[in-house]
Image 1 (cartoon, rainbow, N blue to C red):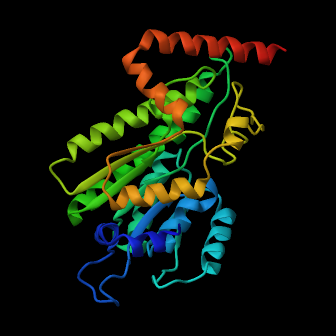
Image 2 (cartoon, helix red, strand yellow):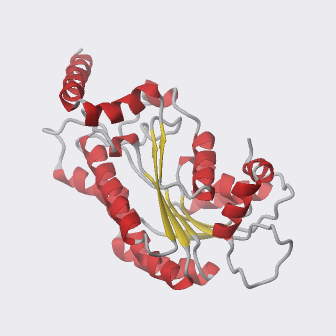
Length: 306
């Protein structure tokens, strides 16, 4: 179901999403139920999240380091069929999320473009496949810079303006691996565990304000994430894992993110039965969980050596 259809068929969601996406609730710019918000979108997963929020009427600020890809996404958004929800031309801000100093200056550019950000979607990331013993510390640092320090820096840069404006919603796309760790994914799982912990703390510290914090933990999503993953020496993995190829569509996950914002959810687990059970098993029976992960590591090691 398209985002606009979801909003039309669910008046509660519509009102709630409208409340979060209003760019300036004092200005008169059309129908009362129009969505005219601003969302800072860290571009990934073929722009599906951007497309869903754009269709719902958000005014987007598309962020990333590849200007050509962002230009393609802006053109693609412009060609999308217009429904009853009025859309707005997106802005774009070019910067490298792993460069903390660049993030700070980019936040000023974002605010100059749209005045304020009501929804920040931290959606950038890089995956990893490798053996801990062989992985260079520089690779661990790079993944932490992109997956953890980048979202943290951008959130800290924009949070004061949200507090000043009296409202805001911070969304971070984490992973099931922010809840559990699987072998040969150490750097990625570590970055996602750190992300989960930081935004859980932020949610608690913002409880007395009108700032909402949502952590989305997807399982496998059908994207190029595994293709673009880095290995223990920093080279590109370049393989489409079977689990990734058979994963949930990025559009489905984007729709879930939209609903999570509308319903002010604090956390969303978007995974199949086995990963979901594993999350609970880690808490209920850690000994069994550890045994299963050890068996998985043994199996993967045999496959790599075959």
